[in-house]
Structure formats: C-alpha cells, structure tokens
Image 1 (cartoon, rainbow, N blue to C red):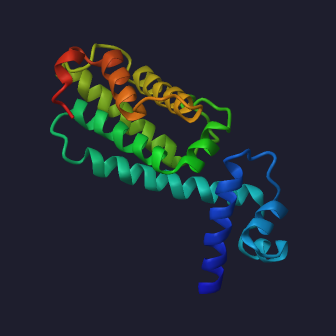
Image 2 (tube, one colour; image 1 turned 120 degrees about the horizontal axis):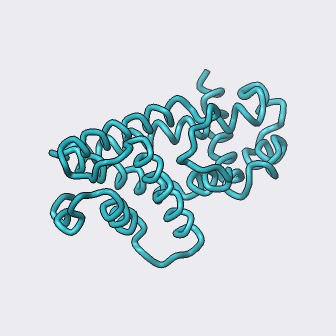
Length: 195
C-alpha cells in the first residue's frame, strides 16, 4: 500500500508539471517516463490520463478551498470574508504555478457554469454567491444579481492571473483585490482597512 501511495504521489507531481505545458499534448507514456516508472506500473495506480487529471485537480481544488477558508477566517464582515477568501485563493495559485497554468490552459471560463466542473467548484461558487447576497443585504456591495457578481469575480481573478502568468509585473493579489472592491463595493475607497 505504501508503494502504491509513493507511485501515486510521484505520478501526480510529474503529471502536473507536464500538464502545465499542455494537457492535450501530454501522453500517459510521457507521465510514466517523467515519473521513472513503466507505463504498466502507472496503469496499476490510475486507469488512464483523465483519472490523473481529475486527481491533480481534485487535490489542488481541495487545498485551494482550505487555504481560502483559513485566510478568510479572521474576517468580521461578509465583504472582508469575500476579499480575504479571494486573497487566499489567489495566493494558492501563486504558490502553485504549474497548477495555475494547467487551469488556465484548459481554455474554459472559470465563471461558466459547466457540468464538467467538479463538485468542489460548484460548492465554492455557491459560497461566493451567498457571500455576495450577504454583502448586498448589509449594503457593503451595490444591489445586483449575486450570481452574476460571483461569476464576474471569477472572471476578474482568472484574467488577472493569466496576465500575471504572461509576465505582468505587478502584485497580482493586490490588483485582484482592488478590482474586486472597485467592481462591487458600495464605497471601495473606504475599504483600505478592510483587509
């Protein structure tokens, strides 16, 4: 069992690095070679490439949500919870650039509602939507459609992280927070002490 877990770990690490350069162009044989194992050994751990993709994404999505929750925990208002959660998620992506590149190279909008997104994605989106509802109710966010706001927030985050990956020379986390506050907050200039 320990040997299988060791294989699983090295396969996922190598696959993530290869997927960062493109999932479609990465073959199972490439992953096995990078992991230093025979393809049959890889297949004893994973049924195929899609299972590896799902495992890499699931592992990171769970860790990303956990990071966002930890960073947002000290917040005392719904808007602070929202902004700090975005900060935690952004920092996770910055700390895991191969996973970020993998997500960005999937060529799908994070703000889209797709059945192919994992249950974790849907839960996170619902949490953001509910936070926007609370922010609208307490007046810290302009009245509007909480669902549309949550989608716009994801679009801001995705576009700014893509810009950062492409070499933009700015503090991407601060830029995302600034854009989020100016897009949604009732009084964005008064939010400086929020976070």
